[in-house]
Length: 242
Image (cartoon, rainbow, N blue to C red):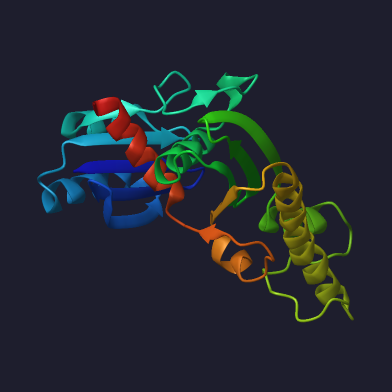
């Protein structure tokens, strides 16, 4: 059994896998890190191996707790991965993107695959059927766009995310919803169209916090998977344990 720990800026996700089967998933505030580790150790005594991916700073005490309870793999840019990384600045490639590409290679082998992660940022990552990671794109996510409209203007409010009902907004708030949400949807559909023009046999994965919100609005045929990063981290751990 494997423990996967994915540390974000304010929250941390914990997942327990038995082989490829997800048995447990929980997202908590970073302050509860050690509490959850101790709980999982009691509930899953078979847990032996763990991997941690962190985009934020975690304390030495938290790392020490993991190392005390498990054989720990800390994901870095030097970790062995199941693809050829052709990114020109590999040391700047986000660990979350490394995990996503690893999941794609494992779950969709010998496929040209575009992974779209819709969260704070929207990242696009492309891996070829020969397991060569070429790179992709980064753009602002839905919440980032709403916040930018509020922060960078004098009079536009900060709105909650809402699916627009019409193409034409008839008020400031509905116009913002149309601009933000349709803007993101059209961006994603546009990227997918361009990739399909070059790679007809394209597999498309949509993941991230906004995946479910967006999946029904996109024209493209996609596989929505909210656990894709966790699955990728689990595969990296297995890949390095062999």
